[in-house]
Length: 144
Image (tube, rainbow, N blue to C red; front, side):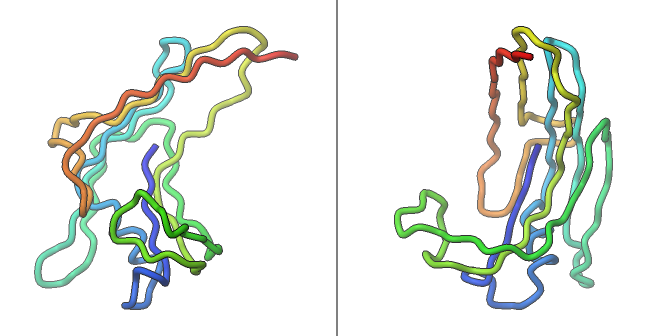
C-alpha cells in the first residue's frame, strides 16, 4: 500500500533498515477495495521525536495490513531514473512498508481499486514529496 526504501548509493550514514523506515515519515492513508468491497485500510502517522531522533508511530486505523521490512537485497538504479536524488548504480538496499495480501480471486471479472488519500490527520507527507493523491484501478479477468 505504501513503501519506502534506502540504498547504499544514497544513504551514507549506515543503517539501511532505519533509513528505510524514515522514508515513510508523515501521514499515510490508503484503502483497497475488491469488487467495491473494502478489504484493507491504512491510516498511520510516523514522525521523528525532536531531540531523541527516535521514530514516533501512531496507528489511527489498520485493517488487513501488514507492515514489513525486507532483508538486504541488490537494487540497480538506471542512469535515467525518474526518482530524484538517486545515484545510478548497483547498491545494497532495504525496503519498509505496509502491504495487503489478498486471497485468490474466483474465476471471472474483478476490479481492484487502490488509493492514497487525505487521512483524518492530513495528507500524505513523506520526506522529499509534496502531498499527493492517487487513485488506481486494476481490471482483472481470472481464469481457472
